[in-house]
Amino acid sequence: AQDYHVHRLPHYAISIADHLHAFYGACKVLDDADTETTQARLVLVDAARTVLAETLRLIGVTAPERM
Image (cartoon, rainbow, N blue to C red):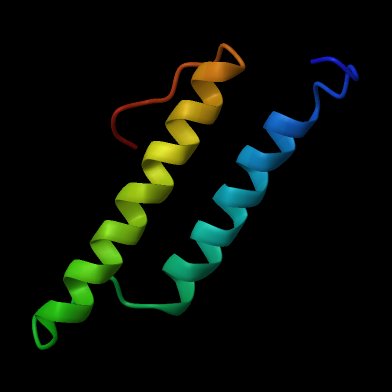
């Protein structure tokens, strides 16, 4: 805010969303055969959800609970 670069948060949110989309397209998140990897990937997806929600909150945008 001090340097008036207000575009940084929306660009950060877009970057996180782009990376999550690429990850989700490249990796199978839910895998019944590998529960350890599934749990790790679910934690990663939840962390991205938290970061996106907080970033959107900071810029005054509401995030949907489900899509």
